[in-house]
Length: 84
Image 1 (cartoon, helix red, strand yellow):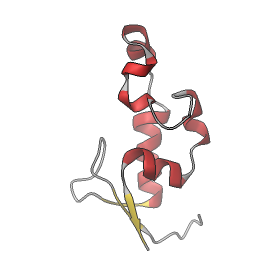
Image 2 (cartoon, rainbow, N blue to C red; image 1 turned 180 degrees about the vertical axis):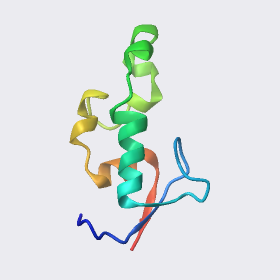
Image 3 (cartoon, rainbow, N blue to C red; image 1 turned 90 degrees about the horizontal axis):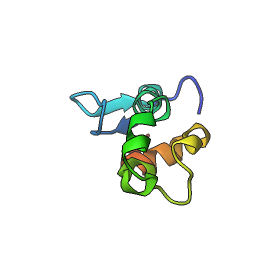
């Protein structure tokens, strides 16, 4: 991914713009703010990890492994799509 990445990400989940259209950089910033940098302590104290939908994705150990996600992982995790 280059700094001049002109692709458009269509994402309508938590933290998205009303238009649901984001630059790649905007989309990654949303994913980091809403998931990677989120404090999961309260949820993890109240529930088992397996009961928190956001933490069930493939064989990843979440939330710890969010830091290893690529753009493609974030797209699949969030249900977003990308257009060139």
